[in-house]
Length: 136
Image (cartoon, rainbow, N blue to C red; front, side, top):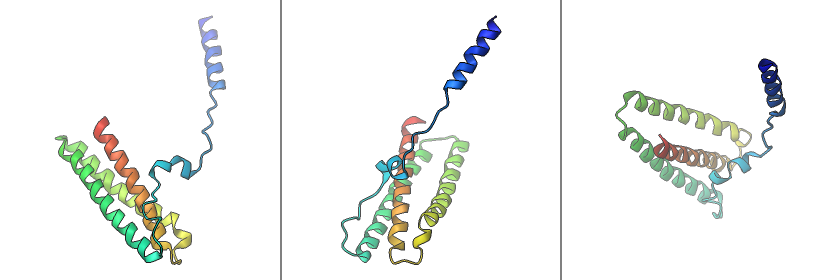
């Protein structure tokens, strides 16, 4: 009797748990990370310079956070994982931004679009590294 009850309960649970992820756009999901730091620039050259400066600043911030994680641990395996994770992330971001900007690769706005992608990805990474600092 217990087996039958268990099977019925299990089938009810499994049958009613057809989870459907809410349909959200990339922009909705990543809204906190989207960058508008250079949106006020009046021409392409100013925007390119601005985004490059933002990326340089953000990369320094990211490195500070990564160094903090590495320096706060004595576990060599953990440190190696952090370094590998960062290297793999850098490869991923480079490739991902090339994919996101593929259609504009010959256009005049390519550099700005590519940098906006990098900026967004770096901001996401900084957020993740800071989460690691407080949760690991």
